[in-house]
Length: 367
Image (tube, rainbow, N blue to C red; front, side):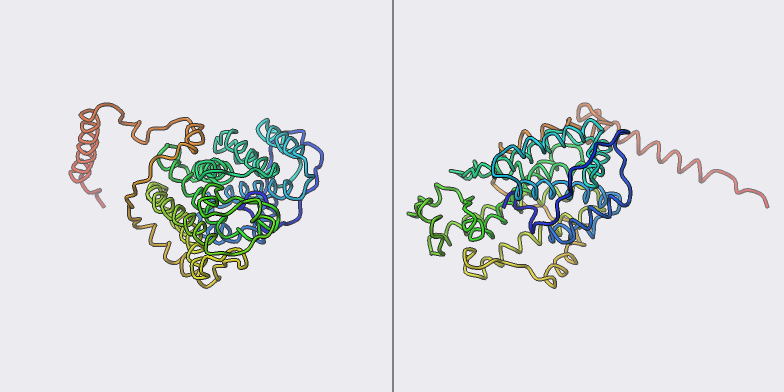
């Protein structure tokens, strides 16, 4: 399995002729993208139902293309040549000449409209390449590097689609992507091992006396594996808590969906714990009923999202993703010293008060 954000293989669109007249997307393209997601990333699809339409449609276009890339990498040849083919598709999207495929056409419109830096999609593709290479990760920092590419990049792109272009909430969105990726890795330990893949930090395994190569040949659940999975989930939980501080900085109409996704993914970790941390012989599943309860709880985020204090140091592995977005100061319209900002606020309030008094002093129109 390539990126764990996008699961359950679906049909892959055939490569067709290039469009001659630049990007053009229709509601039919959006519908096909939605159908692709409906049977695939169920947690994302559930959360997307709460997104406002202005965000939901471009978000589905983004996820459909990412999902399509994932499927192509999973089902393509064993060499990394398929990565070059996908790079060419990204290049065409940014040239405004996407392939005549619904997901490509829809994404070409999205990247143009929301000014999504190309480096973010290329980071995702690089993560897929690491999957194709069967890359392993010695430390949690190296695993962050991988998660930043296949999940943090998506968080950054979603922030831009929601209309957030300044760095702090984008950084929190990348951390939410990392948390989700670590949760998925913890959930899929057995499935990945049976496919010859190992994403758990190798130094954590060795600290538990586990030889990674030997275990991969015969993956079994042991107390030692349980401790590694528990450690990964605890790391993810810290990231979930920290990412929550960015949700309240999102547009109000987007908060519930993102908070819902955060709750649903974190619940996967709770389910793994209920299974005594056995994700080798079992797969943790959050029931539809439980997801609905969590999504209802997430609606409160439209009104209030509590801030969580953590001691986590800044994660340098996501820095380049955040910095790929041209910095936009949320206070740029009254930039300057603290005194200048205070004067701006006072002047604005005084202006509003003058308008109010002027309206009060206007005579009523004669009948």
